[in-house]
Every structure is written in structure tokens, then in C-alpha cells.
Amino acid sequence: MPKPVNVRVTTMDAELEFAIQPNTTGKQLFDQVVKTIGLREIWFFGLQYVDSKNYSTWLKLNKKVLQQDVRKDSPLQFKFRAKFYPEDVAEEIIQDITLRLFYLQVKNAILGDEIYCPPETSVLLASYAVQSKYGDYNREVHTSGFLASDRLLPQRVMDQHKMSKEEWEERITTWYGEHKGMLREDAMMEYLKIAQDLEMYGVNYFDIKNKKGTDLWLGVDALGLNIYEKDDKLTPKIGFPWSEIRNISFNDRKFIIKPIDKKAPDFVFFAPRLRINKRILVLCMGNHELYMRRRKPDTIEVQQMKAQAREEKMAKMQEREKLQKEIAAREQAEKKQQEYEERLRSMQEEMERRQKELTDAQDTIRRLEEQLRELQRSKDMLEQKQNELEVMMHKLAEDKEMEAQERAKLEEEIRTKREEVGRIQDEVNLKDEETRRLQEEVEEARRKQEEATAALMAASTPQHAHVTENEHDENDDLMNGEVGAELANHDESSSIPRPEEDRQTLAEKNERLQEQLKMLSKELADSKDDSKLTKNDLLHQENVKQGRDKYKTLREIRKGNTKRRVDQFENM
Image 1: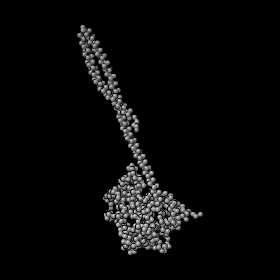
Image 2 (image 1 turned 135 degrees about the vertical axis):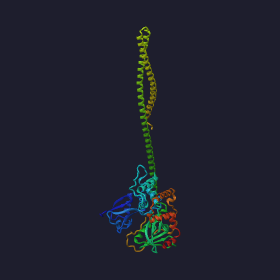
Image 3 (image 1 turned 90 degrees about the vertical axis):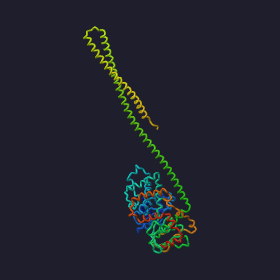
Image 4 (image 1 turned 120 degrees about the vertical axis):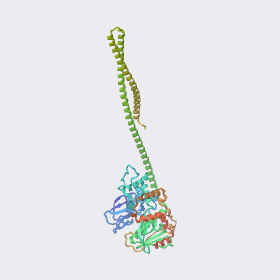
């Protein structure tokens, strides 16, 4: 039995390992991958490998894996990547897994400067990347330094501004806070909707020469073929939509494009190597097929996928609404609990204050009772002395005839007794006054005691509370004669709509996004180091100054008939 071969496939966010047989085809391996990750929109994707000459190449699905020039590592290494891009992500991407894979690949290309992105757009995109990773901003959880290990901006952007990592984090977090309530998938979609308006998004660039031998770039993308001058990958000079192209072919390094318009000459260019033309052919065939497919009614399979995606999104939204209600209810309950805890603290403080008042009142009552007892003793003594005085007076009256000496003595005793009685009377009056005052204090204390008792009772009462492929491998050397593909006939293409020529960038359609980008541009202007601007930065600035954007340029480079544009290309 043949020995299995180990294969490692790296997606944008996972590593998958398979054991394949020597006769396994590229399609069988591809199908195994998409089944494993649950991907149904397979037409966008392909498997990439590095060949024996160190070139990055797409695996052909109709050939056996081991018959292709895959570098003999162990395990065999492949990358699962987007090979073709949608025209409009919001209209075409159906599954969340497709969205995530595109998002990660585009983000990686922007951060690696493979797709030029201006600084202000880079910061805004970074804020959506943070939302897709961390969910809603939470001041208590997302504290200073929480983005320290995240790669969010192109190095070029950071080098061009005199800002610390902390300042960049602060700026990104400010905008991140604006996306509160946005689902992670929606944040990825917003990222792609902005990114797809970038001039280099989804473009495969190839070194070519025209018949004059001028070095140029050929850009192949979802909308057609564009020609760029060698020093400017941002602004194409001539464009040919897929609907204008009838046939594409190559013979050795010469590549021939036949337009639908038979009055127009063939569009001919030369690539530096045969393998480049093979790759151009594959990308042209795939992009043309998808371009035409988008302009026809959806297949039953796509309709079913879209219906399922709508249902899943609705279910997800309902689940989110339910979750938000639960969160709101919990927050309300926590708020109520805080209110009750605050009221309880307040009542406890009130109880302590009332308890102190009660204790003070009880002390006052005890002092009053003691004072009353003392008053009674003084009254008893007064009465006793008064009785003694009466006895002595009586004795004096009876004994008028006593001797003068005894009489004088008795009178002295009577006078002394009267003084004592007067003094005791004053003490009694004083104590009487103090008693009245204490009784008033007792009444006040009793009133406070009753209030404190009522408050204590009140405090203790509860409150109720997935295209057609070229059959030839990029590494086939026997390429005598012409290889090509018939893309469309005149009748088929004449009625094909070109809605892309009426498109506007998201920023042009969305005033809020316009304002956000203007504000970010102003914020970054003060820290910008103009000496570190790259060629692409200067080209972008000039495009902005001239009022150009991706779609305005597209309309401009497609003006005039095909013959005029082919002649223009020949004269570059």
C-alpha cells in the first residue's frame, strides 16, 4: 500500500494537518480543507505553495498534488488564501468564515504595506480591528496598555509620526469607543468596506512591457485589467473592463488580449518570464468568470446560502438583543442594589445617631430621677426644721416668764433656725427650678427616644422590593504554440452592466465617515514628519489634491472606445 504523505495547510488563523495519498488531486485536498473549516464560498480561494525555484504558485486542482512542483518539505506546506476578491464585500460575502478569512488577509496586507493605506484611514481601520477582537469598549477592562501586544498600524505610519505607543493606543481607543454595540462580524465588514476603496486593494501587479519596450505594471483585479506607469501603483492610466475582453492568450512571453470590439486592434504586452503569463492567464480567467457571474441571477446554491445566512444573522441579532436586555436588566439590578446598599449605609448611620441620642436621653432621665430624690430629701429636711421651729416658737410663747438669759439664748436659736429654714427653702426652690428644667429635658429625651425607636423599626422593615482553471501548470516547460481562453462573445458582453463605473467610495457616500477621516487627519497633522513620507504617500496626497479616488479614476481611464485606449497603451 502506498505510503501517505503529510501535508500542513495554514489558513489565516489556523494550522491544519492532513495525510494524503500519492494520487490525491489538488481538488481533493482543497475539498478536505474547506470541509474542515466549514467554508462554502470556495470560488474566492485557492491553495498556494512555494515551488522548487522558490516562486509562490497556486496549486492546480485538476492535477495530482505530488505531480506539481511543490517543494519537498516534510510535511508539504500550503497556504489557504483568497485568490480572487469580491467587487463589493457587503453584497457578495455570505458566510462569517469567508468574512473572517478576507478580513485577516486584507488586514495583514495593509499592515505589511502591500496595500497602501493613508495614516488617518489606518487609525480608523485599527479601531474596527480592536472592536472585532475585544468586543465593546469597557473602561474598567480595557485599561492603558491593553493594546501593547497588538499589531494594528503599518510600520510606515508609526515611523512618520512623532507619537509614542501610548499615544497611538489612546488615539485608537478613542475611535474604538465609538463602535459600542457593534457585533465583531459587523466590525470586520466595516473594516473591509473601507479597505476595498483603497487603490491597491485586490490588485495583482505584474511587470510587463508594451511593443515600445516601456516598463509598465499590469493590474489584474475583480473589475478588469488596468495599466500603471512604473513609478505609480496607485493611479492606473488605462483600463479595460472584463466585459470588453473576448479572448486572452499567450505564446511564450507575448500576451495577447482580443477585445469584443472587432474594430479595435489586439492589446499586446510582453512579460519577463513564461510563468508570469501563465499566472496572468489563470487570474484573468477566474476574475472574468466571477465578473460575469455577478451580473447574472444567483444560482440556487447561492440563493440558499444567502437565505441561510439571513436566518443565521437574524437569529444572532435576536440572541444579541436578548443578551443586551439581560445585560441591561443586570445593570439595572446592580444599580438598584447599589441604591439599596447606599440607603442601608445611610440608615445604619441614622440608627447609630439615633442610638446615641437614645443613650443620651436615658442618661438625662437617670440624672433627673437622682435629682428628684435629692429634692425630696431636701423637702423632708425643710419640713422637719419648720416643725422644730414651730415647737420652739410655741415654747417661747408659753414660757414668757423665763429668765432673760434663757430667753436671749432661745431667740438666738430661733433666729439661727429661721436662717437655716430660709437657706433650705432657697435650696429647695433652686432644686425645684432644676427639676423643672430636667423634666423638660426628659420630655424632649422621651420624644427623641420615640423618634429613634420608630426610626429603628423603620430601618429594619424590608423594602419591597468557493472557477474555471487553465489546464497548464505554471511550471510546465513544454509550451510550444499559443495557450489561451475564450472569455465571451460580442452578444453576451454588449448587454453586461458595469455598475462599478457609477460607484462611489464609502467615504464619499457616508458623511460621518468623511468627518471621522478629516478629524483624524487634523489630529495626526501636528505630529507628522514630512521628511519620512514615501512615494506612495506623495502620490496619494496628489490624488486627494486633484479630487481623485479609486472609482473616479476608474471612470476616467475607461473613457473613449477600446481602440483609443489600446493606441494609448501602445504609445506609453
